Length: 398
Length: 238
Ligand SMILES: Nc1ncnc2c1ncn2[C@@H]1O[C@H](COP(=O)(O)OP(=O)(O)O)[C@@H](O)[C@H]1O
Ligand SMILES: [Mg+2]
Image 1 (cartoon, rainbow over the protein chains, first blue to last red):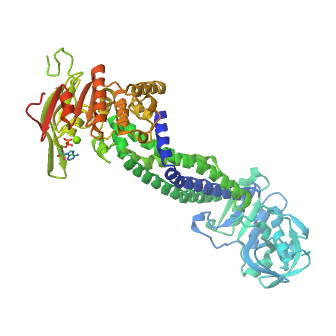
Image 2: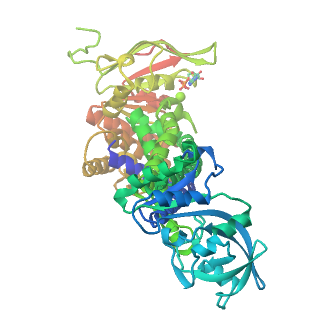
Image 3: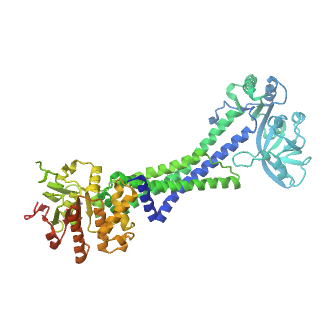
């Protein structure tokens, strides 16, 4: 039997049981749709987060506690404020290039408004090194740090929430129950607010010394070093390392470039995406079982037809191929429609939800390939059963 | 002259040599349906197979139609032993050489008369147009030129059997096997169907083997084989 003829027969058989075919297709359709949609969301998160890190500039070095093996979980930091100065002294060239912070979450209060926000206790150099710009008022100064002055610079969203419709400059507020004076507001970064990254506009900056007292620590969580240029990243990394080795063991810190961070974070999010794909794949599997089931029913219903076709000269191959094709048409159709709906769903999510979504070529190829493969795998058993029917017994069935 | 050769030296169309077919039911229950049957069918032959219900007629016809293989003995087609041919070759043999007519017609209810007749042509090479033309000619030759687009449910029993006969002869087989072709029809319609089969046998030099209950029909055949409990009764002409 020619391929075209086989396709015609398959379509005839499927159209003869429209509702059943549609419901069977639906199972595969939902599976493929969820694979495409969830992978799109995972990929969207990945490119958004790596994009945010890239936005910091390719010449930024991150000095983090621990030996760089992120699998080991968070480490207790050994960094102190002196380390920032030590690195600054060793680095050649001028300018503000080293910053440090310690981070915590505190309750904020001003007038009647309350809010819990991320408080960054930073060196005065922090906005310059991490490219945060001031919108209004003044930034933190070296003298604020030295004297542990209780002053705060608010992120744009924090300012709007605590002082709605008012000018926050000069107002007082409480951070963790301690009174602070607002001296400035940061420019809006935007793009934040996704469930996958901290919203930089919700931060509050305070002098590192005041913040350390607030958190009850003398440590820094991280140090940032802006290399003179992208080409000098490796040189500067060596300098930073040497400076810290004067005081710390090599296992106590690691100096990581932006590329490496993107690599690690990208890997983690890639795994997240694959996990999402696997979960969606389970629904595809369930759809496949449905196909198998309905094809077995179809074979049983059409036993006499199979017997007749064999009597008229159909080979085992012809019959097996015919049923296999039927299964593949079912799943392929479900795959194609599921793909279209998955892409449409991803566009909707990207447009109307704070979740990024990005349909990638590989998820499309995967979805279509897998749906055809599901047809093959789950169609084989019923198709072989059909092909191997004994024509005499099949013809006698009524 | 070998055992396979007919009087004029061409191979015999079909030969059954000491054919035994035993059905196994479960582990140790055996049903001997045929217990050693030998006869031959020549080109253009007309053979009636008679016998009471359960005597082994259908079993024999399935073996002649190579839908089944004998437990022992030989069924030889064109001099070739069926037991030595692979399944795909038997399928080809059925498609090229044999036409079946069943008691219950076995038409596919979803297909039109025309598509039912086209069915065996689908399993051989050829263009769609050519298949269509052949099927139309076959339907016309059984007097159903005006019923091609009808589905089996829209046809009478006699008309359905005519469609089935058109399907059997559209491949121009050397042998038509009919298992009680008039069993589901009234007497007059049955006569018409038998006349149709006989005219095909006579005009196209097609061998015809018919299983029947009815003595009237059996008498019209050139030869009669009577089965009794899986063996040929005396008076059968092998
Ligand atoms: N598939 C089968 N399995 C077991 N026994 C069978 C089978 N087919 C036929 N038989 C038995 O073989 C004998 C001959 O059957 P069959 O050839 O159908 O007879 P007929 O067509 O002459 O009525 C019967 O006893 C029947 O019960
Ligand atoms: Mg019978």
